[in-house]
Image (tube, rainbow over all chains, first blue to last red; front, top):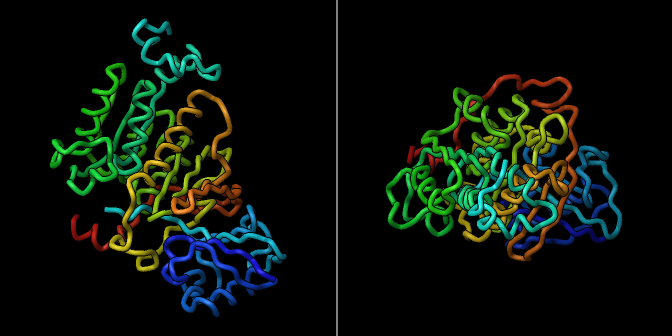
Length: 93
Length: 270
């Protein structure tokens, strides 16, 4: 089951500068594991030491924030579009 | 308010819009907007608001114009390198529109001064370039029930959202806490095309104009995400979070916090 994932600029170093990648998974948790398999190091940027998604990063399935769905257990189906959206602050000084 | 002939002439191309008219123009001339940051976002925001005739525009910034700012900070000019950004912006904005009042605050907002500064404005616009200011601004606006237009840029990504305290999600509903030092890309990794800041800044200016005019649908409860390389926009829903630390049911942030600056480059420069 292929899911399109939107990768934000701060994480694109880990995805060979790609803003969109395709991964597999039946839930958001599986999707993060598959992302890590394909792009080692990315899980650490998304999740904290306990495996929870960091507080300045949100994951959306289609338009919905998974915090208001079933969090990491949110189910995914073919054709779903997942966006990883972090807080950004400029950084152009 | 009766518009003068020169005002009718100056604003004719927006007065002729059925959504604006003479009444809308009077609202704009009565409008009071505070822009925090006279940089990449603050430049297009302030220029469009001044041109549209927003009657009072406050601008807060403590920096001086540098040559490397001019690639994106279009409110400033080469001749003003070395001058306080707020003075440089005031000069350009009052030159553009003699009809408006521009108030400059040559300072950095802090927990000590922000409530006092935002108090006399109808809406606040986030043109800041760092998390401490962004969270301070959000909390101050939520605590004093002041609408806030948020914008952020990083490389080819941009974000914008409008916050109506009490009605729609705030920045902490979206991201409860600022990232700890070391977990966000450093300033050196940043870099920006001026036009990308322009896109987000103009969206913020448009939100402010719509808010003052009371027209259209604001980006309240929606985060707009822009990708400049694809020229794509998408929006995601941002719900009010009952557990939000500042606007939720049991807030833990009840007074303002001065977060530490964590970009080492900025710190060194003071």
